[in-house]
Length: 281
Image (tube, rainbow, N blue to C red; front, side):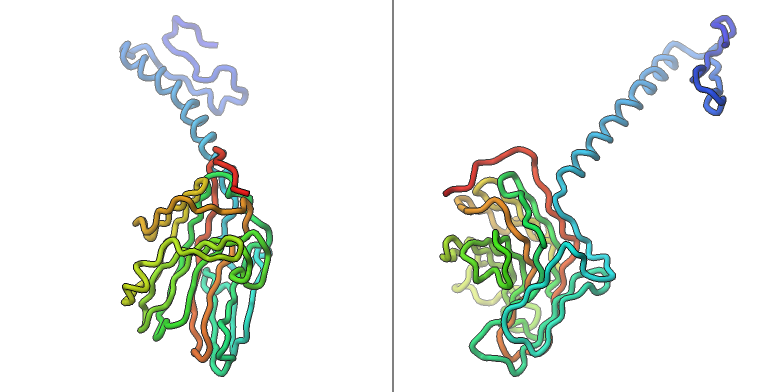
């Protein structure tokens, strides 16, 4: 042990092995230097604790995440399909979920739906829930009569649109080419109600879209939708009748269209631990 008279103190004179036992000469330190040293040493463990707590809270809040890094679709997903297709594909391709459908020569009376849903329902809607996902409309020569989007639905089905309760956020093709419009719809007891349509049907021109980052926030009976960081829709009195939901990622197409593909990526669902009001009866 070094004595105080030597002008040196050991940083860790209790550590065995001596690897961290280098001593610091304080004989020529000013009083200000000493104070700064003590402040720095005191802050290090405090900062470490704050960072650990923040990391723990963040991890605990994440309910579901998939970057579709492949090489194949994970077991947390179930494929869905409703209607007749000439060709349909659901796969992980290049680090993204790819949905592709051709409906040439199929039944003119039906719209075809396919995609994936989570294997388990996500119990998040009784609290402040946030869902984020990348959606790529692709390079469509003609996006007419095609949709691409997501559903929150309390039941497991081949097509959530046929179920009595759901919330849907989707893009609807507007001819020609890359043009589409965003639409938000809620269905309660089999009765659909549009919350947002981009002015449809009065405004029919649509807009050019590509890869969109969607952020959906549900807090009690209030919904907020952002596209690429810009608010598209803020709706109150949403009146969801469910607090658990499967997440569906879907593409639909009417009959007699060649192969068209869309992509999803970077899905993340998390929640605020603070409770909100219970769902209405």
